[in-house]
Length: 219
Image 1 (cartoon, rainbow, N blue to C red):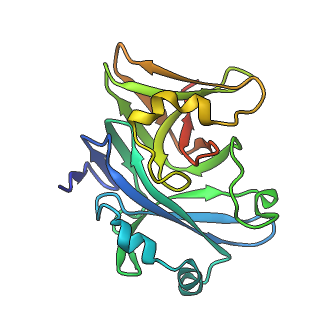
Image 2: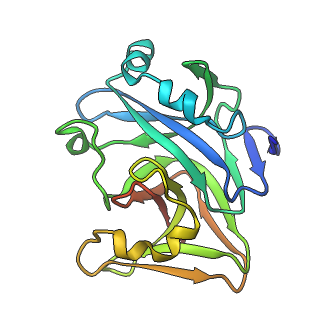
């Protein structure tokens, strides 16, 4: 059921988000020090059916979008329980291979990240231009990375990209599978009260080596 609902101009609210399946495509454009990615997301439009996702051709999308590169980012499952996201152009919906996507954010991509192609570098922080509020409900688990300097990143979604069998249940023992940087650690906590994680204008995200995505926690 589609429970992606508007909450004022450009704002989308969604309840019961934990476990929602989606896919994303990053359309990379620009040159020199002005490389950016427009993020297109299926949430609220479809549940990213595996057969249709597998049928998407990045080369065709690249040509169609006149892009520098295309990054396929899914399928994925969200882990927050509620969300509120401000969209600049909420009606900006496009179709790739018959699958609908909405323009949800922009990611800044340093030139050094494009050296050697668009292969992602785990545990490297990127800035996404978006305003969001993620709500994690009391009594629910959160999955976190803690960097050597104490910075905490909260998992916002897990991916089926590297391991198609990954599930939320398997995240409890994920630490044994990750190749973490020195002095980093992975932890699982059950919340004793609701936790709201916010980003205003900029969200700082990383991925682990299984391409699960985390947002930097509130400072």
